[in-house]
Image (cartoon, rainbow, N blue to C red; front, side, top):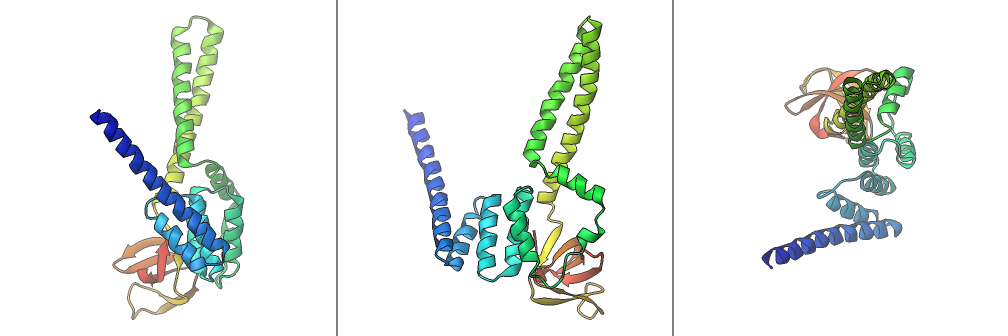
Length: 250
């Protein structure tokens, strides 16, 4: 009887949490539809404290974009695309927002075609999906090895041997794809400039010489952090230092 009561309480708690989250989504979407973008932002931001998803970051990005806040819009589109790299709507809105930044992205010019193809291949699936594929082909590898070792029929042994090699290669590739996607989500290598205009320095101190000027919404690669300074690299390969307060990591 005690276990039944505990199960009911737990179920009610889970349902209450789900209902609260669902109401915030509904309220946020309703506010967005009624052009109450600040209210929508508040609802989505509150929900992100307890859960995250590509759709939620995408909605938040849209709300920021509609309210004229370019940097947080790009930040949330970038976070959405990390979780769902193949969503065309997220890609389109991100590119639209980037067109309004002062500093243009030069990575498309510098990036090698083979590197771009490799990244597109890795981004086909989420890290969890790649991990599942890796496990499946690991089991198939074991099955192939078993056929080769324990079956007496030569034709079947050959099939097992070749199958084990192919399955093991797919298993290894899938594993490294899962690792790559996971690292991209968790390492926070990139940041978005939030200050309307910031003068980057040649070294991490206020008295250093000016290196370049960056503007709101620019995406930069964070190379390292020294106290309250980021060493950043632009898409064009220029390195400089900015205050951590001038950018927010994706």
